[in-house]
Structure formats: structure tokens, C-alpha cells
Image (cartoon, rainbow, N blue to C red; front, side, top):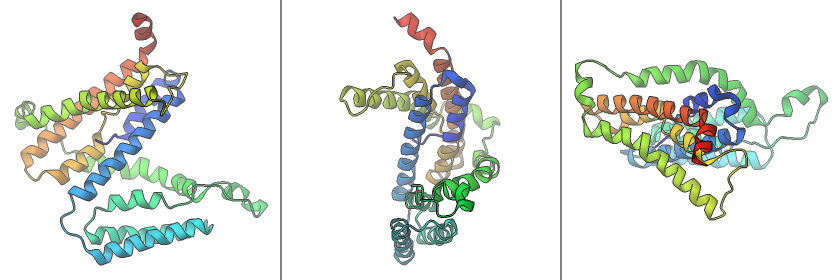
Length: 270
């Protein structure tokens, strides 16, 4: 159910100006939401036992971060140190530590503060969350994500791969990512526009929305990660990883082509 934000936005980047900014915002928004949904599933369905003491410590420190935020504390180091303790507390509680990451991000100040000293202007103009993002981005993009992807992929293309293609698990995942998820994204976007909950930006079309919805089927890293939690049978793990790889490549390629030639498609439909 999760979208690989890095890979899907990478496809949009290849399209340059053919992908309007509003389309990138749309893709990023629903990718964040369904990633939160995936993490919620991990928290609820893949937690066997809970250590309530450690969980209580973690939740208590989350409220502390909220209090620090409300009181105007903007020291990045304070948020970092408390966040480390929260991560350890969630990990020791039995709840997957990825849940703590989402909750922590929601407590770090996003609003910009008043510049108190001219010499600190270039630094203080950014919120603590923005500063953390800028500091962590190179490490995440060029070290953590590649290692995470490679360590979780492990797709074997040996003798068992051919048989895995016919498995109901493989077929189900491919159909879900390439057909089911895009249909769901398009359907709920259409409902939101028709009911007045949202409006379709002037610079994008429904063909481009469909292309972005297909990019939502690129679920590489997080999907493979959940596979490791969901299955213990090596055969099922192989089938799932193979399906995720095929579906992600297919969804990415189809989404790229649909957005790339959206104007031609729209002119023919007219």
C-alpha cells in the first residue's frame, strides 16, 4: 500500500517541465499518506507483544516534544536527543521503531522563528524541522536508502523465479500495484473533486492524474520491507519480492509514458 517516494519522484524528475509542480505535490501528498497508512498497519498487525513500560516512556517523551514545541524551544540538538530515546523506547516496547519516526516528525517545530541576532539570520530563518531535513538528507539519500534497498531486495532470479511468476501471491501483488492502487487513487481523487472537497489544479489534467496514480504503484523499498515482516516462508518471500520488482518497474514505466504523452492522449480523446 505504500509508495516509494524517492523512486516515484525520480520518475517525475525525468519528465522535467512536462510534470507540473502541482502534480508533484499531489504525488508527494498521497505518497506520504499511504506511507503513514503502511506504518500504521505495521504497528497494529506486526506487533506480537508490547512492553507497556517502554511504550509509556516513549509516549511520555512524545508529549514532552509537543510541550517543547508549544513553548517555543527551537534547539535542534534537544529534539534530536529526546528523539533518540523515543526511538529506543518504541523499539524495546515491541512496536516497530518506524512508527516512532512518523510520530516524532509531527512534534518538531515547522514554523519559522523571529530572528534574534543578525549573525544567526541565515540559520534561524529555517525551522528546526527544516534544518534536520537538510542535515539528514545527504545521509538518507546517498547512504541509508541505498543500503536499505539493497539489504531488503535480495530478489533471486534462479530456478524458482519462473515458478514464482504463476503464484497467486505474485499475481495478486502485481495486479494490486499496477491496476488496483491506481484505480483507487483516481477514483478517490475524482470523488474529492466532484464533491467539492478538492479542486483540480488548472495546470494538470486527469490523464496526468492517472499517470501519477500509476507511479503510486512503485512500492519498492517499503513494500519489500513489509514482505520481510509478513512472511516467514522463503518461497512466499521470493514470490512477493519478485512481484514487487516487476510491478514497480511496470507502474513506473506506464506512469512515465502516460504523463510524457499526456497532451497527445488528451488531443486524441477530444
